[in-house]
Image 1 (cartoon, one colour):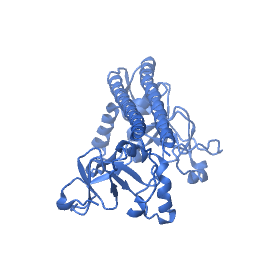
Image 2 (image 1 turned 60 degrees about the vertical axis):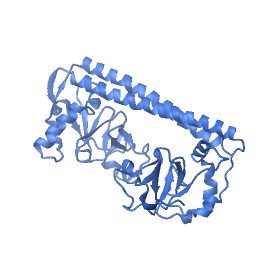
Image 3 (image 1 turned 180 degrees about the vertical axis):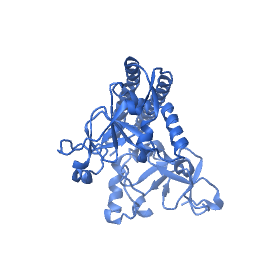
Image 4 (image 1 turned 45 degrees about the vertical axis):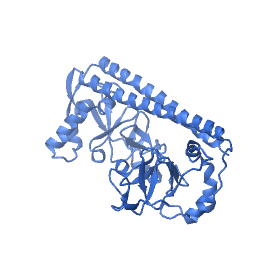
Amino acid sequence: MRKNKSNQSRLPLTISAQYGLVDQITFFNKVVASTDLSNYYLLKKGEFAYNKSYSSDYPWGAIKRLDNYDQGALSSLYICFAPQDNVVSDFILQYFESPKWHKGISEIAVEGARNHGLLNVAVQDFFHTYHYVPKDKKEQIKISKLLMLLDERISTQNKIIEDLKKLKSAIIEKLYSEIQGKEYSYRQLFEIINERNNRLEFSNVLSASQERGMVSREDLNLDIKFERSNINTYKIVRNGDYVIHLRSFQGGFAFSDIVGVCSPAYTIMRPKDLLEYGYLSYYFTSRQFIKSLVIVTYGIRDGRSINVDEWFDMKIVIPTKEQQRHIVRTIKVFENKIENEEMYASCLLKQKQHLLRQMFI
């Protein structure tokens, strides 16, 4: 119940599911706390806070330890505590990442007590919940060390993936900055397709993602009831097509390696024989393309979105088919490597979740 008297700390904190207790300025890019923090709790390094706000990942709220700062100020909506001497702090840290403490909270915060995303949990009720901890601190240390080593490995794996993505981007920039060949307009490279789904042959509704290309809306867990009822008005997307939605993405493009249908608002483009399969999907992520798009967007239309006709008149240098294949194969090597590392990261996370379920009573 320690208050931040005289604004001893001017660092307002919030809980991030991924990063724990973090500075509001860093997390939100602004301060959402009040200017006067004297009525906030003063949390010190190594102490814990319970945020009663719930989410899909944290259905009964999140409990995190302050690790990144010596102290900080927390809203009085949080419940703050420190572990006693008979409990290892790292053990408690891992325990509250497991679902084992949810039962106690669910008994004092029933579904009907939820209000505006915040659980109605009284402080006294929270501290009267039961938690089972090994009496031997050596056992607590063993469990926490194993789980924290796994956390370090997951962090390292994420860094590997991040570095590979940066390397892939650098390779794309280098490959496309060195291309030589004939200059073509997009009008010479593509034809616009307006193939409608009149016979209801295709029911896989797709959505454009700048990172993943064309993706099934079901894979994104998006509701498709409206799309199903209007499926006959949708456009057919075939393997190898490019999809453009200039208004939505300010010049956003997605390559499709799957078959399905998409909204009539999209423009579907089918590459002509001048292009290798997937070649421009990488070019559209390069700085070289973005630079040329900015010139058109800001030079011709004063910052407004360009239309399809203006985009089709843009010029691009296209190398030979063999050079295009070399570029695609080179980038694919990095994509396959990234995909393998992401699969391994997923396995590590599953292993951590399994241990969190099994190692606590």
